[in-house]
Image 1 (cartoon, rainbow, N blue to C red):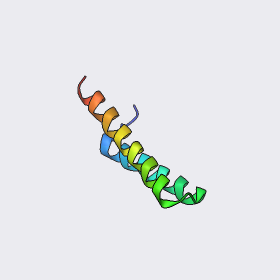
Image 2: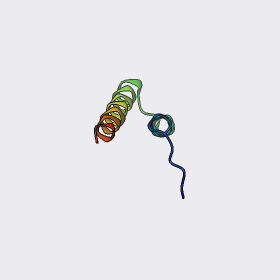
Image 3: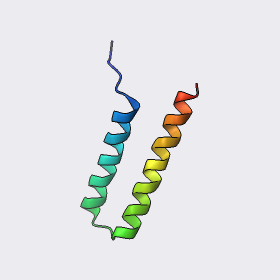
Image 4: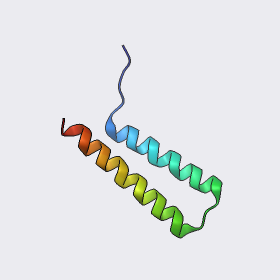
Length: 53
């Protein structure tokens, strides 16, 4: 049986991956912060939605 990772770990991996992609892409700071903010909000929304079940 597979061991599941916690929501916090999954969210940190997602945000870290998006941050790395933004660094590689070399976008200006303002759009990068916006994209990272929307990613964090999406993670929070999905975590809350999963915990409500």
